[in-house]
Image (cartoon, rainbow, N blue to C red):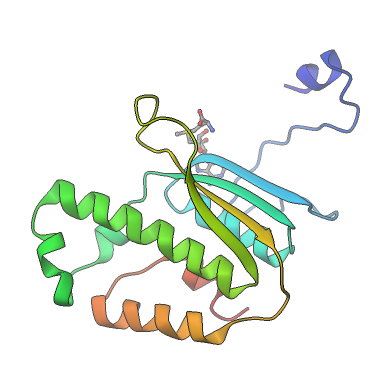
Length: 165
Ligand SMILES: C[S@@+](CC[C@H](N)C(=O)[O-])C[C@H]1O[C@@H](n2cnc3c(N)ncnc32)[C@H](O)[C@@H]1O
């Protein structure tokens, strides 16, 4: 892969094979974090890396959001959304991505969610687009997320990774 950088004269470009869940990814200043279809909680680890390193920009396209789907076991007022497997799966995937957006907002990012390619190309086509705008932490957002987790009884990795930051 290093050959690609050389071929196009990108002298500062380096490819490193790492496990986002446990390896030290980079120790310099981080301007931007991009993820494309990083499986399940791998997206959460990458977003956590971006938050901890105060990356100015984040472009993240999540994929395979299984965590909430596997852990949620009561639906409260939204229990009908958990009755049928395919609906539950999609509902939990959307809940996962909105959780991620909310956590980024709690850390001072302005966030929008966009469809970055047509559904015909990939059903996993929601991009979380974020820019760090304020440095103040918003505890109210976290309290609200904590209530969701308590009331609906599920786990969400980015929440777990950032709740004590
Ligand atoms: C669905 S593929 C997407 C590949 C490519 N980004 C794309 O969109 O075509 C998921 C990728 O996430 C990577 N991945 C999953 N868990 C990871 C982890 N813990 N650390 C680093 N990469 C991970 C896999 O190696 C795989 O390349």
